[in-house]
Length: 238
Image (cartoon, rainbow, N blue to C red):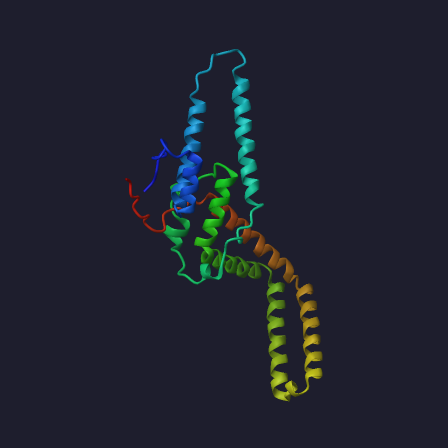
């Protein structure tokens, strides 16, 4: 179900209608409506009659640069958003959306956001819908990064082995009865862990995985259209 135009235009302004769609949970319709309005306004501006003049190229060049820098501004505004602002633990508890039809979708499932407001709407909503998909991609990127950086992988395995040894020694010698000795052993293990991670360049592996994963998540969430996740209830018209 979609609205090509405001069906209540005789009594409700467009701004109020958009607000009603947002408050009622029809975010998919609001996203499509925003894209349609932007496409209609662009087509109207392009079809506006102009008198041919010798310097007719200047307005065309100006319009091109305005559109270009507007798209650049929209794209840069995406990276200033906080995609985790509306996330909750319940978003990770549900089933994982389909990787093909749900997460990736088809070619027509993507479009450039027409405004920073639409990009913000898509990022926040898609981050909630595909939270489990994005988390899986973060893990995949991290594993691939460790595969490309064997020294960081060796450092991680060494730290895990170190803490297994500390736990084994604590259970074997009953160090829980000697809290001072146990705390000293834990502090020493923590210092050794930090040294191993620093020398193995593990922090760079974390940074690369988070950087690639975050960039991919932001771009996918901003360009992925909001598709219907449930059939909207019928609207009673009096």
